[in-house]
Image 1 (spheres, rainbow, N blue to C red):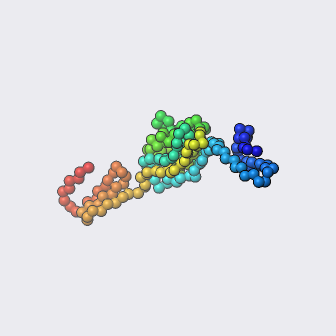
Image 2: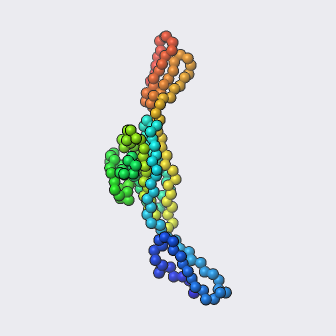
Length: 187
């Protein structure tokens, strides 16, 4: 037996074993090498709690997606009961992430619209990723999911004892003046 014909092998699914009978014990051992494309995969995250977040500035996915392979994603504020995708400045319920899911580029442009999908009382999000490898030489990896947020609370900056600045949001500053006098405030 000089080689193993690979064109007659069934689809590689699960734990397959290949057995070979060699009648000449002095013959060199033969090896079998095969590359296969895994089935499409769906990965779901746990809930990410955002209860201490005042406002989401952006959520970004960093991934490696070489050649023709596909990563699509959807978001759920309802413990995975409903999955949403973002199209034309609106959130839509999707039952088919493979067809409707947002690409990496689409997902990374959503930004502040995440605030409209968060449940006001129970701020949490789950993420679902659909991954489809189309070629054995492609590379498909989720590297990280990062977010930029404004946390609840205030930032207090004290320069000296004449006044105090309280940053209640990124757009609001409250000044408390501790001495009488005339002040010019530039904003």
